[in-house]
Image 1 (tube, helix red, strand yellow):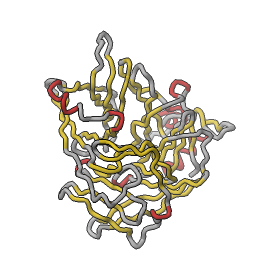
Image 2 (cartoon, rainbow, N blue to C red):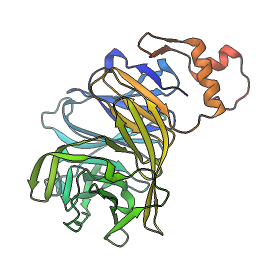
Image 3 (cartoon, rainbow, N blue to C red):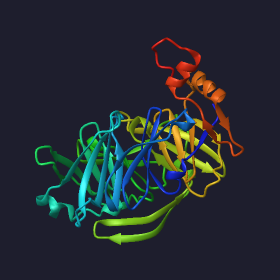
Length: 366
């Protein structure tokens, strides 16, 4: 199936953050000083962009998002000022993706000292099966700051508990940002440009070397990676940016490696064999896609990848499409219009497709 491209609505063109990607729904948030908006779009319906929720806040300083593994909840950590208040608050919002209701917790006053140790500009927010977590995503050497969130529904407050990940052998010179593979077990992956990778096993509190599986299809030694603007800090070493043709996104069974070479993108699925202490990268897709935009961000499910630019979002299916997907997209092509730049506009929702073709069966069309 070809790459499917939609134009972003004018209201959200420009700088956006990826909130999450689950099944056929991509969630994004426009970066604005006032208000936190979350929009969603269906992978196969060009006209389906809609704002699902807006938090009425001003002077937003920090906002970090994560989507729960089951796709039912979005968490947003933010610092902002509420109407009729002058002092900014540190809060976590939990948004139900089905009914778009939300709940907000404020930082517990007694937890302020613990939060003083958090450099919010450097943290990543991630939701596990069990809890919500936060970690420093920019450190390449040294201890990895890691916290879990605790919520009090009675007081409508939250606090954090530190459970930092100890540094590995300093002879392993990590040259790119860490991969938080499984936050519930504090499973972290580090790479140094060699064949082997290091994985922290939280169950035994140790770093373990993993070697390439005999069926591995990507040699990491062939991928050049360079850290830019090294900074030494109290906890270790970080880079301002990483220069490489290798992108890594997703986690666990959704962890994807992408090699870019001009307009050619090659995708590999990453997996671990914990019994043999090996890893495998298996090529799953190769496409030619050259974005007209200078920069884009990537989100993935286990079957789909989204390229999100400032004006266009592109969806790529990395597994063979199902008959339902082929049929539903075929119906969209009847009702949608393809523009000169390759993007699609219009289309019909699943309900509208049912009505148009007078489909009585209750089974999902997609």
